[in-house]
Length: 176
Image 1 (cartoon, helix red, strand yellow):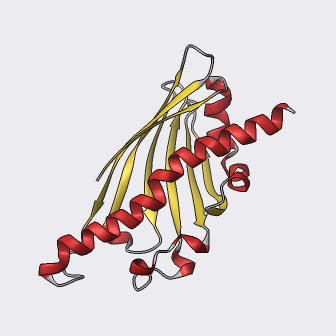
Image 2 (cartoon, helix red, strand yellow):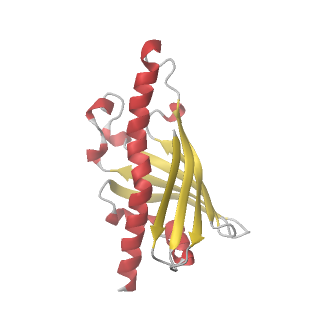
């Protein structure tokens, strides 16, 4: 499943990039489907680049009935492995789900661009791949893959827009 999301934040590029990299845990307060975001590790490289691992805990309300046999509430989190490159205004990322870790591969890049109104356009491009072979009967692999892909996609993809909305609210609160 391809991921391609473009969002807009009415704040300057530098503010958006720095807040997304350095203030992400504070944004959880503005995201109703996220219980918390916790920085697990941060490595500042000599060239100004930063490697982060953030743990996103989804709200318990996020598991649909069809996925409940596969996903326990305590597994409703993912690790966001991010490599921030300020020289390119880019972040390469890989998401590691707490459930079916060896069967779900989600990775991509986020780029930040200044737009004419002084705001920032964020473009998220990535791919979600599932491997359910051997987990479910062969005749059901495509159907179940579609269901799980849809569930994971509904957890991840809308969060890109919601993250931008939360970022906007966060930056607005700092202006006041």
